[in-house]
Length: 179
Image: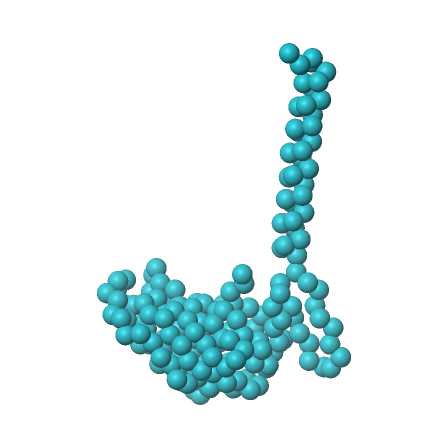
């Protein structure tokens, strides 16, 4: 049998160890959530740093496009249209001039080039699997690819991206994904 003084000491050590573990876990979570301070620039162009992603304040550098995005709305004739319920359209711009994504039914790939606020999307290739559910997903895919193909300009506003055609009445509204 363990004397009472030792039981208290053992329980105290267990409680202390739990507290230390909880404090360390909290510090790790806090460190992981903390962003890095904004970068200092020598020129007039300022950058904003969110987590580990550097975004051009005005979205003029094509590097502000690189990374994963998801579609929040398709804009057709100046009217935003939310994606079909239970679907998600994802687009990732790679720094080598390629892009890839998933349009709720099929994966796709293509090429892109951007300079200042202008963008050129080409060589869009997608599988041709037909999806019957949810209702409207294939129409959404057709609209999305038409809007993507016709995109000629882009604007980055923080974590938001707008791709639009020459008229400004049609486009895609996207939100940046952070992992």
